[in-house]
Each structure stands twice: as C-alpha cells, then as structure tokens.
Length: 365
Image 1: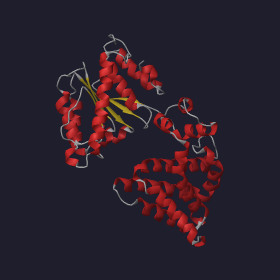
Image 2 (image 1 turned 60 degrees about the horizontal axis):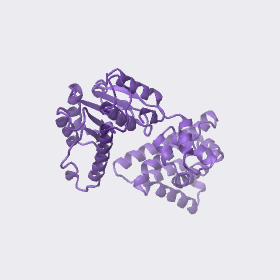
Image 3 (image 1 turned 45 degrees about the horizontal axis):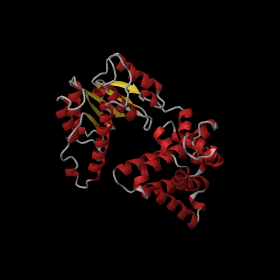
Image 4 (image 1 turned 90 degrees about the vertical axis):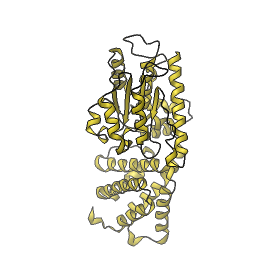
C-alpha cells in the first residue's frame, strides 16, 4: 500500500516521491490541474508519507498501516465530518465557532469562501509544535476561494513557513491565485487522466455495456471522480433538457414557431435551471455539448466528441447553428454560471438567449 495505488498523473507522483527521497519537501506546495484528477488524494498521501513511522531517511513511500498512517486516516475523517457539520449550520456567524485544527487538517470553503477565521486559525496553529504526529500538514483545497480579507494572513505564513509545518494549496488554475502566493510555492502540475485508466475504472465492478463505457470514458474528460460516479441513466436524464433546448434553437426561427414550440423551449430552460443542487453538473454537460458541436463544425472529426452516442444529432445541429451562434451559447452559459453565483434567476437568462438566437436571420452567420 502506498503511492502505487494512485491512478494516473505518473509525472506528478514521481515528482512528489522525488522530493521525499531527497528529503527536500518545501514548506509550501501548489497542486494545480483539472478537477477530479487526484490532487487532494495525492496531497493526503504525501501527508501520510511525511509522518509514516516506517519510512526511513531517503524513503519515497508510506506503508498506510503503521500507527501514524492510521492516525492520519482518523484525523482526515474527523476534519471532513467537521466541515460537513459546519456547512449545515444555517447561522453563518456560528459556522466558525470552536475551530480546532489537527496535525493533519483539510481546509475547504464552508460558505462560498474559505473564511478569514479559518486562515487566522491556520496561522495561530502553524507555529506551534504538532500534537500527535511529527509534522503538521495543512491541505487547503479550493485555495482560489480564500476570502480576499484572508489573503494577506495566508501570505504571511507562506513568507515565513514554520519548520514543522507544510502547506499544500490545491487550485485548478494557478493564475487564480496572487502572483505573490504562487511564487512562494513549489508547483506540481496535474493533467487529465489517460483514457485507458478511465476506461478501466468504468469497467471494474459495474454492469455497463460497451457503448455506455465508451460514453462514460469520453464525458469523464480525464476525471477519475467523474468516472467513478458516472451513471448512464442519470447522465442522459440531465442531458435531455439540453437536447430539447438545442433542437429548438438550431432547427427553427421565431417567425415559424407555434405556441407548442415555445412551450417546449421554455420548459427545457426551466428544467435546466430548476434544481440548484445540480446546476454545476448541468452547466458542465452544456459546455461539453457545445465543445462537441465546435469539434464537428471546425474539424469534422469524431474522435474527440464526448457525447459519442449523439453523433447524428450533433452533426445536424452544428451547421444549422454555425460558429457565431455556438459562441453566443457559450457566452450564455458563462452568464448563467455568473447568475448562479449571484443567486439570480438563470431561467430568464436562458430564455432571453434562446429568443435572441431564434430571432436572428441566417445572414448573420
């Protein structure tokens, strides 16, 4: 048991193990790359390795079985439970009451942000000696969401890192962080996981047809997390309103639409926005469909199309929409995401976008 269990991103694992072998793990690391490719998993593995009692000097792995490795598992389970409990507290002022940080601490947003109180607690604990483990590790997941009022506090810790503490920041895009933060961290870059690895995950212990595995492999887009949770029926359910929406905006014009057509269009917009808990996944599916349409329109190739089961429909829609309308739809999804963050009605935005597209003439392409 150890780093050999990690799937994909061989280069990132090799670089991490190399730091361990040379005994040169810096006080601050930055793990960057797409969501779902194992950044947090590798950060927690590194935390175990830094504390594993069976790792000898110059060793580059951890056992996962010694008392310290088991203690690390217990601590992480406790921090995840604490985060979930705090997110469930309705009174925002009480969400940060009684913060206690362990030797191995996972720090994530408990609202839209990682709050100043969370970073203040990190700073006050970072310079103290660990309680139960030789080294204290702070894993800051979604580091781009650190509240602007807390950035300077975090920066001060990074500028003068404690010799007993390691900070691992996790962020999909390093450029979402201040240059002063990036410059104080050693960056380890993660990439989408190779398709054979994703296909193997989908094949293990799941009764999926070959076509379903092919679809799952492509829509996962290199994300292990997406592959592990892929449910063909659920994916098609979430995708269906997008198909109705695209069918209407690509196949008709406003002047030729009857009341039934408008009802179908508005019902699809409503279905896409009514469940806020699914909004991130709904938008992701929309972006994937637009990427497929662009792929077909610009190259005509099928090999990179994610929604491979929809090829005939996509090939019909792509030329009807044209490049300009696809770009407009992409801008509309960007705006829908912004409206979601601001808690504004997304449905009206999609309906207005569809109406504008349907009112355009073909000469505008």
